[in-house]
Amino acid sequence: MSGRRPVALHTALVVALIAVAGLSLMVGPAGLSPAAVWQALTAPDQAPAAIIVYEIRLPRTILGAMVGASLGLGGAALQGLLRNPLAEPGIIGTSGAAALGASLAFYYGLAETGVGALPLSGMAGALIAVVLLFALAGRDASPLTLILSGVAIASFAGALTALVVNLAPSPYAALEITFWLLGSLSDRSFAHVTLAAPFMVAGWVLMLSGGRGLGALSLGEDTARTMGVALGALRLRLMLGIALAVGAAVSVSGAIGFVGLVVPHLLRPLVDHQPGRLLAVSALGGAVLVIAADIAARALSSGIEIRLGVVTALIGAPFFLMLIYRLRGSLS
Amino acid sequence: MTLLDADGLVVRYGARVALDGVSLSVGKGTLVGLLGPNASGKTTLLRALAGLVRPEAGAIRLDGEPIDALGARARARRIAYLEQGAQCHWPLSAERVVALGRLAHQGPWSRPTAADGRAVATAMARCDVAALAARPVTTLSGGEAARVLLARALAAEPDILLADEPVSHLDPYHQIGVMEVLRRLADEGALVIAVLHDLSLAARFCDRLVLLSAGRLAADGPPAAVMTAATLARVFSISARVIDAEDGLYVLPQRRVERPAGAAPR
Image (tube, rainbow over all chains, first blue to last red; front, side, top):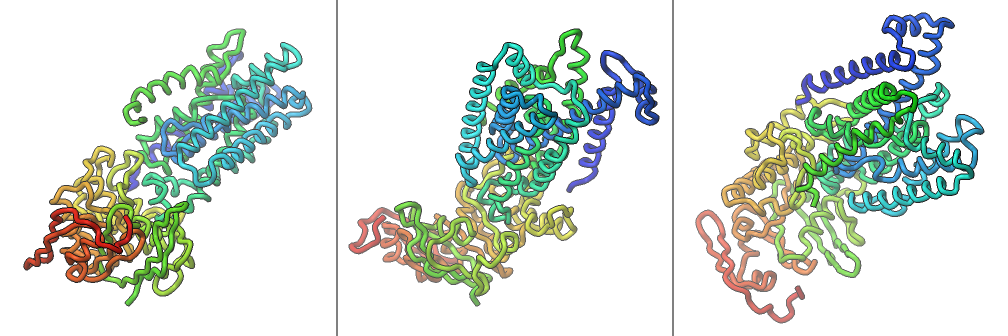
């Protein structure tokens, strides 16, 4: 039943990931040849090429892969849990609350105190959003209650973030928060990578362990329970996983939207619509998409940086509209 | 020999009493038809037996042991539940839907075994859906999808199948087809409890009929003992012709009747 195709798909995505990662190390204000990148990676010296690769482009690329994997996996997990192809980590308020936490870190000047304050406050925001969601919707909530509660939390977090920008002590601080919210991978170091990685990996493990439960959930919540799925535990695992991975991602890169919507939707037919199998491939696909979008953002930028979140939104929003147009018959 | 035993089940939804002290004892190799007017507690009883609602009083025992002692997965290997109006939320192929029935038999990371493949193939053949294997379930007709979901329940190879209205919305050909599948399952030793509305189908295929009325047991016995004019008038408030033919009982509802004095309120 599960023949060679899943393996082929995984292989193709890994090859694509290696390809865009290699390209990401080459593209930038100082273009590097494949040979120069290879030289810098295998035999690092103090030459400018090695410094550019190691200090600037490698952390940026690794972080892009991690953020993309978190967003893609988070989207696939959420769509499986809610049985709704329009679900996205942004919808349950996780991204919005993480952005609020990070904005507060900027507002109170915590962002300057060290590399850790910004991501940690972002993840705290994401966790509060999940706890709030469970308090509002309960562990036995229907998908509709869950989505409505998430939308309410996301709106409230958005309103509070606007308030933070409004009250910013100086135009410069307001601009800093606003620009950060647009989402970017520039000027990120290995410190960002090591800080976010443990939370993201924990989130990935939690989400990937829910694959089997998501398969059973295709048949509805009651039937899944009679098939031996502990539904409350499954929901808790997935929500916590999403909060950790997506919260950490938003905290280190700002708000990068629509990856969690686009990637699972594109890959779903290739895994025969199986929500469990969609998880791992969406992580790979998300990594490829975010690195590719980051390359596009760098290639488009001349002087003023085009933010990564702007690029993904420009791709994602029309895609979202198209999806609604195609699904509109079945949404009522 | 008793396989499944329910004793004094009480289920309340808010102020409404859905089950009011229902007791039922059934053995293997039996096809039980669960009948009763709308809102008489049929679905609630089935859901309680499936572990989906926890009765606030009473006990359910499997092989004489309290059913709660069984873990969720162990229970899922023994009891399959076919939801009323069941559906699949993603356009999975029919074969993949049926294969979901094997979940409780598989370890968290293991691949499907040969035994899993055989169970899926057998279940699909029985429900006459082998030809639909590659079709997305969302493109199937109502009758086809219902048979695929029945095959999903059979693929678990359960000792007990709890089916909520498995033949509603099916044409007569497929109604008889599904009843034959359930009959064969019981003949092979399984216990099948099916909620049914068609009195003739229930009388002809089932070994035993259990009638509920307002959350209480109204009648319980072999079809010939239960399908009497007096019982049908008391439980369903109808008069009916009961025809004892060579191939079983035919029960034809004729008209509504006044509820006899002292009957349970509807």
